[in-house]
Image (cartoon, rainbow, N blue to C red; front, side, top):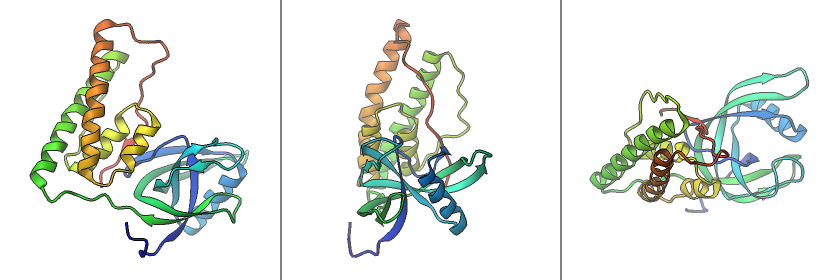
Length: 229
């Protein structure tokens, strides 16, 4: 990435969540500093950045974030009588933080756009995407069987980048692994890593469905909805 590209200043919201482009993320805003931030974004029609917490906590003292995050646009906002807010956001573009700014009650950063590069080998990329897409469909079927649910997916995208983001959103994996996917340098690298992760997760789910002996603490649920471009 070329640091000569002009950076923009962006309010940052450190969360225990990894947001991907196209993913819908509802949030309840209760801390005063983030209520101030969201009011500013609404008044100026500006996005903010969602970044995974590397050290620290969502509430209280300022947390240290990972350096790659995703811009979020506010789609809906509801102001509650107690001063808190409910908002619905959608992920836009990835960014990398060049410098953290501590001049406001909430964290801000100088950020640079971080596009996801495609491979020139379109046939190979399409093959990777088709394989991951098939594994995602299998993953969803296995989760439905394990949890005793009926999960209806209207349409799974077919473009390699959208397949990659869908897989990242769908998989119930550790946030560190999701962050690794978000920081992928290319669509091909993201899909290759997801192929490995899905193979692992599908093998585990297949065993769980067959044995009927998964831990009671295991809960299944999708972390967000992916909107088409």
